[in-house]
Length: 119
Image (cartoon, rainbow, N blue to C red; front, side, top):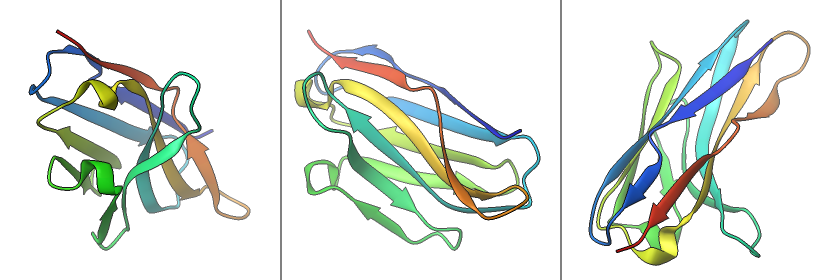
């Protein structure tokens, strides 16, 4: 059984910072690409940032220069450092990972963590 557990969400004022963490646990043979998605009320879930097992990254245009994704392969953990937060960053943030845990590799999702940017 594989689990992704997120932490670090909360309420922050515009211009502030938050750091999200997502740890994968369970029977993990291989951990491939990891990423963060977000979903705001009434909107579709969108990719925020992704990182390959080798460390290559990609970002949504809306967060480039403000957010940084990183990972610690020894801890099976991915991070999202969010700086200069804006009200439009308010959403539920979900961790995603491609994991080989017996059988074929598949995508796993975390339970989501709320990020609210408001004064």
